[in-house]
Image 1 (cartoon, rainbow, N blue to C red):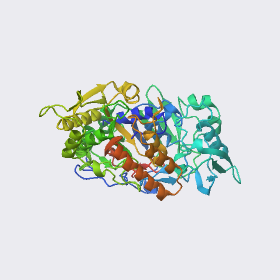
Image 2: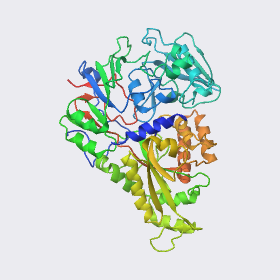
Image 3: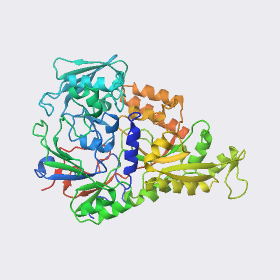
Image 4: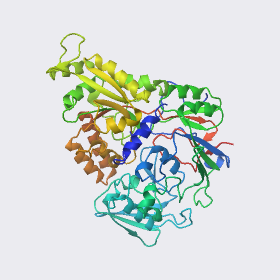
Length: 559
């Protein structure tokens, strides 16, 4: 899924959806990856070589190094900034969140009514300017992102908008946050990453002050140089870092065409690349000496979205249900990723990623059942005038337009397989390959499709990040609900979940929501991304990180 973090996630949608392109090692074809785990060659950092340069590819240089700003809120920027910026919590391999003790000694819920959270900042935590990180940095972050000042081009106000007051505790290293209404996912959703007060206090700096480079940081690495001509980002150890000393001396990202990834790895010019769903990149990686293919089921999953807007041919939920039963998800997954992951695992939940503690397969009544699909279509009055003909109702043929971005072979393959499967039911599917740069702007965002396919990303804050996908469409305010399918019961349960502070009860609500989403046929989850990486086999604590965030301080090379 594209990580849904407000209206600005459309840019993220493009970035993530198009990343799909896609020797010796831990992964072999036909062997399924374990769930909720990582494949990173885990080692005690103390046993790794002191020094070395990690060389990684990028699709493009970030256009803004403020991750909280609209243009900066995308996955590649996230991965670079995780070596530079402080954050309150990290996402963990089990799909949950863990306290980042480099920034915080503790984060405690000290009152439920009203909700009050006390953060205790690590006494050693300082910005690269030498100024201590204090409660005032937290307060300024809230003011910049809570929506109260429209001059800030923030990516998402979720959680921040629910905060009433931020003040100091016993010292400047204590932060007391009081909420105006309960916000359950405060652990994973707020202050990731944290930016300095002087930056957040000025809308001009917030919006455009970090378009060329990060100016003030507080991570295990710092920026040495950003070369716009060579398209490289070079980080070096932060001499002022108070946490565990990084094993790497440098990290260098270089913009690289995906068609050049395997050659650059074979020529010892980079140390790893993400395989995605490309069988070519997978096979090339397996043939490179000294390279391992590492796999772990990640947060991203592929899906087919239905357009159920009023007036659309799929506005009828019963018709959507019949169509869904005519789609063989297992056949699609096997065709697209089976060579890389072995027997594919189908995605059975819209809210929680596979491997997380909340995940349950709720797909139940929506398995592949073409006979049931035929009966339901007949009962709905969509009839075949002759054997092999397209179904018709009231003179209207059952014709669905499947819109795909022209430069994305995965989406195109999904469309063609669905075309073949539904043709057997008398449903005509027409593939419409549109310019990639206009895919979201002119087609997905405005509902100019019947069916479409791309990725979503599940996160450790599912209620905050997924609610917008199912919100009530109001004119142009659709959140991420591109198919305009809305059930008030789903919105009500999301609202209840966002305010439910009991983790177990919130998980139950999440799975109740998921069952309703399956019944609505809002979109059909297909399969998780492969999570496959090609990695130099001497590289440790790096690779297929599954559901977790990267940890560059622990990454290094074996002796």
